Length: 129
Image (tube, rainbow, N blue to C red; front, side, top):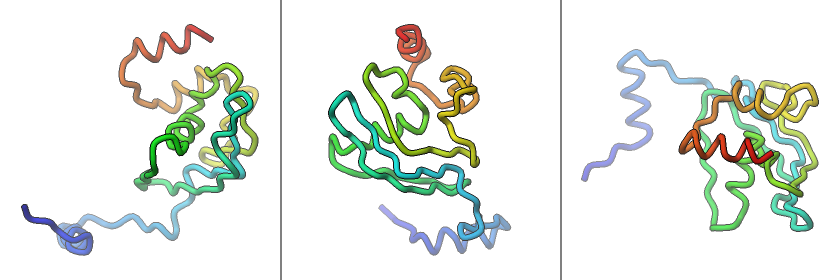
């Protein structure tokens, strides 16, 4: 099995006329500031500060139970459906707080257009609210 280095891929992109996305000049798509999250009395996330640049790929890697899914659920407000869940801190998407009062959960999820494994799963979770 052949592997290609990252540098070779970038060189090939340049030779084919595809420009690279400059990461140092990119504005952040998501800005997470001092995010803490609780399921009832259990704190699952602790003081997360994180920038996700636009037009980038970000991987969350860690052991089972470390908070990866909880963090992703915070980004798309799916934790709003969990009884007893609460957070502190802020999550900005394009410099707007995703938890603003005028933005209801359903409107936010429709605008964000996250992909769900099935429509039935999405609707059944929403209808339980």
